[in-house]
Length: 169
Image 1 (cartoon, rainbow, N blue to C red):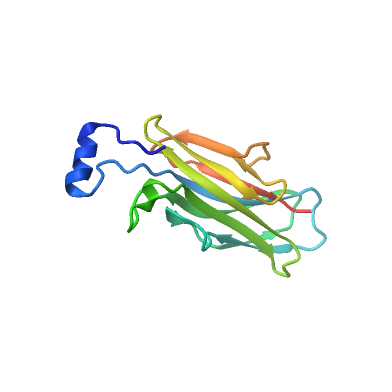
Image 2: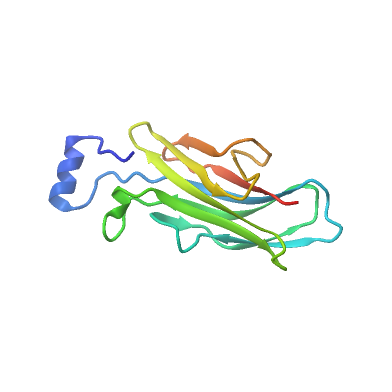
């Protein structure tokens, strides 16, 4: 929920058209592939940060390659991803922030997608990201380790590392 913390802020918005406080959430995204057995030959994976269906995001990270050659987690930094409270038509005041991370192997034999929803709760001073539409077994974790979570939250105005983990067969 995006709320104005004071009548002063609302008045500034009314008279200037610019909010004094813009609630955004930001995290450094680590994209990971989890494999139960070490591959016989290295697997080249391509992560795609963002998609045409994303909305209300001010930073989307960067596309990154990853070579999967060991059992367990194999991760690469996608970079900073951040929601946005500003856009040309003020629709971000009412629409949720949404960002997508996807991957595919070089031969496209395996792929996966994680669509996420971002929120900055200015009244609670907490930010969060939640998995909304994902490939089976996808997790979102606070550290480089498997967890059983579909959302993470953190203190507002901090930028934690968040791990989006895809399980590859």
